[in-house]
Structures are given as C-alpha cells and as structure tokens.
Length: 126
Image 1 (cartoon, rainbow, N blue to C red):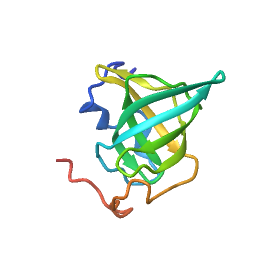
Image 2: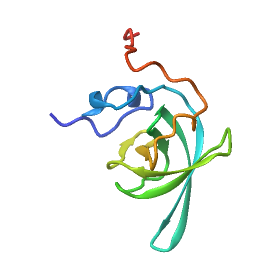
Image 3: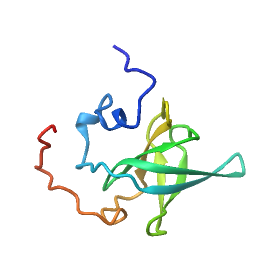
C-alpha cells in the first residue's frame, strides 16, 4: 500500500515507511532553521522549521523542496550555529509544505542543544 502523498505537520511525526529502523531517539521539537545550497551555480536559500530532531539530523518542513542527495548548510536560528547536511530521500509534500529528511554530514549530538532520551527509552504512545 502506498502512503498518502499529503501529510499534515501533526501527522508528519508519525512513522513514515522504514523509520522504525532509526539509529537514535528522535525528539519532537519545532526549531526555526535556515537552509542554503548551491544548485547549478546559484545560491538557494529557504526558511524552514524542524518537526523532529535526533543526533543525526532532522525532519524539516519547508515551503521549497530539495532533491534527494542535495547537500546544504543548515543554520539553527536559535543558536546561529551552522552544520552541513544532505537530503536523505525525496521530500514528501504536505498541506503545509515539503517534509524534508536531513542528515548531518557528521553526527552532532550537541547541535540542537537539548538532552536526548536514552537509547533504551520507549514512548508510552500517548
């Protein structure tokens, strides 16, 4: 069965196909970020915000789509810290924009400046 093409920001936090194999715990948090890439020799900038984060990257919601494997620089608007990221797979369109899965070039557990749950922590499903 093919998952629905349109996802609301609320439903974006639900498991998408294959996400049950995640490498680290994710935290549902909204952080404003700025994305920047050079595509065909032109600087492309876009504002976005996170839907979920982990030590390996984030799922962001953005009004602009970026193709899979595109490398970007992401800036955390709260801290002004920058980090290299890549789009891990094709973004999914939702009513609010595009859900874009981003992976840090190098794991960065301190980039979000939050404490992550321990590896063996399981949600109560609330």
